[in-house]
Image 1 (cartoon, helix red, strand yellow):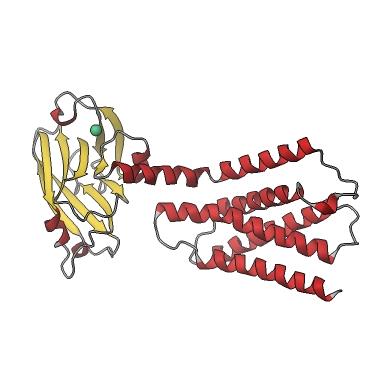
Image 2 (cartoon, rainbow, N blue to C red):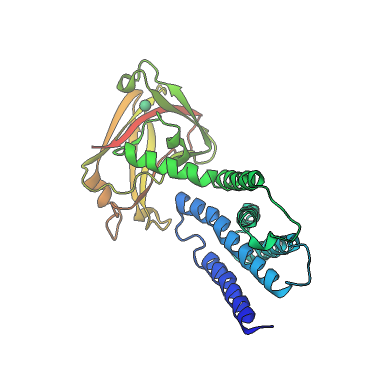
Amino acid sequence: MKFSKRLLIVLLVAVISTALIVLEKFKMPLNIFLWRYIFDAGHIPLFGVISIAFLGISQTFWERRFANPMIHYIIAFIFAGLLGLVTEVIQYFTPRDADLWDIINDGIGAICFLGLYFTFDRRLTGSGVFLSRKLKYIIRLAVVILGLVAMMPTINWIGAYLSRNIRFPVICNFESNWEQKFVFTNNASLSIVPSPEYFADSIGNNVGRIDFNKNGQPNFMIVEPYPDWTGYDNLSFSIFSENPETINIELQINDRQYNKNNENRFNKLLSINPGLNKITVPLKEITNAPKNRQLDMHKISLIALSLAQPDSNITIYLDNFRLK
Ligand SMILES: [Ca+2]
């Protein structure tokens, strides 16, 4: 083999190794929805590049062996697919999660990049494989659509974050579908309903109806609200209770440093009377809540409302979480 060919193969192997190192190094940089989805989508270009490198190796190594240039594409796809499978299988045996979607994204990345390269490949000329100009454009269009569809969950999350950031200092008012990507319940159900007339706070709008189950520790959570709360004085929101008696609801606020220790976050028991309750919590109180430190008001990560072992199922309505 000629020196230049050897060099090319070494280079291509280096490209593949670098792509794998990137994959390993940046696995779950932060436990944040957006990063997770961006990382998942990152499999597409990464394995796209890997498949092109395999194509280059195959075309260089077995240049004369296969008369049909398509064989190299099939080899590249199989090798990229196998590598994707192997990296996930290895993860299966480590604390990290193996993910079928990652393998699918690996395959999609390989198809998109190989497909695109195919329409530009000069080696095809004179090999018997002929692509009309029209067919080339159809392949390119199909590849772009496939890539976009595969990246849809990520694009969706980017939309949700942009919308969240634009709406701030409103944190949650149940008026946007984007918002619901950040809202969760445990042992409770959330439904977005038109504001009941007596919820004088927000007539004509929607509110969140939470049905807490009496079993377990039901809660409602706003995960990853807009994180930087500096420059504001109060957190406020409204709770409407249908209960004939006063109920106690615990408000919890975490920052990203929260370590599952109750003293390491803000906790406050709210007495919720029948009817409308307007809650205002000074941010100073929240900042100074943890026992041995201050809450990082640049990095708020969770707002939760929970009930401790209610005697019966309890329904409340929530609205207008915001800073002032
Ligand atoms: Ca509302």
